[in-house]
Image (tube, rainbow, N blue to C red; front, side, top):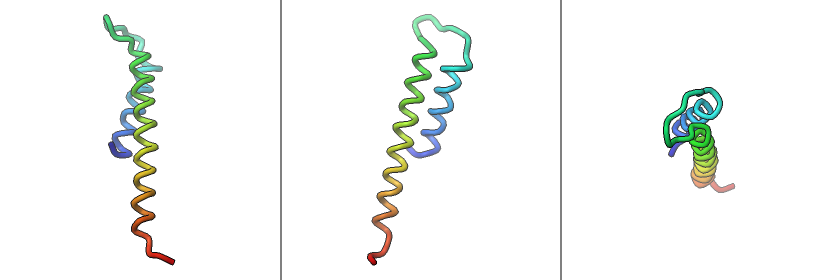
Length: 62
């Protein structure tokens, strides 16, 4: 998952958690939104960590 996908999941989760007032039988949209936001934050942190690691590997030794 890349940074763009993580931001998309974060935004979609926030929309479901805070903006949608509708209900679907058997699905709690607020909880689903919080889960998507958590996955988005985790993916964003992992993406940034991996980007920093590869950038550090490409730097020439000093």
